[in-house]
Length: 312
Ligand code: NAD
Image (cartoon, rainbow, N blue to C red; front, side):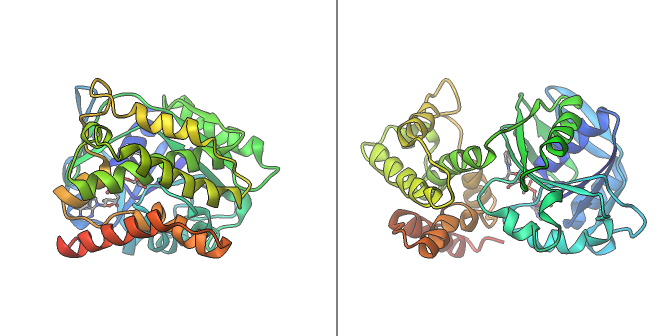
């Protein structure tokens, strides 16, 4: 299958390598010149569970997208705030039969993608695979993960199952989901609590979890997500979601980790996806007339921190 990875950062690189190893023809599109240059020179260098690899890929900058390659499947893997620009630039690679799969963190990406592609060609999902970009052209890929996905438009279940099968055949442990919107909201609750709060408090997940105010903050934020989700016919099980978040505090699990937003913002002074997590809840809250004061405040705090750190 002809697969294009639109956004070949940490996660795009993981999926590219695994899909290519699975026998697919994989092309990369990216917007970071140093990364593109490094991949052209040395291939994409990866440490995959201890195995050192250097995998060659055709890679194009967003401003030089080829007009003669039409993809069967495009995986968008930008950061949320780069998605619109990426969708604009990959237009020449989208044919009448091209499917688009979006596994980005956050809420509401279908609204961006639908500006460029009909709903029956869009597939939404989420993933618990992880990846680290350690420098231009170089990634660290440890651990195992999975993907769940579903068709955006009702009636396209068999197409969604075909997309899941392509990923599953490449070892990505992908499966069709009956209710991806629930999973997307549930995962957004994890990101919408731990990402922003650990970044602002300058703590890892276990340290956050050990504070006396963690429970109240988590319950309130999850409550805001749930109140908004209800307007989109998603009924979150609040106690279960809170328990799921609290399980991450265990130092023997991922408790000693700093969330990805912390690493992007505090360590690398990169802009965050907050507008597509808590910020999305604030926007939707306004639309549905639901008060979301904790999400509003957390979004403002993170933007203020981006300004203080001159994040790019
Ligand atoms: P990423 O930041 O590694 O890559 C996104 C884009 O930013 C790429 O085009 C990349 O080339 C570019 N980029 C990266 N570093 C840059 C730099 N220093 N200067 C200029 N450009 C740079 O993003 P990601 O971690 O792959 O995340 C993609 C999506 O997947 C996001 O929505 C994220 O929340 C989600 N996600 C990530 C992980 C993870 O473990 N990384 C896990 C699950 C979901």
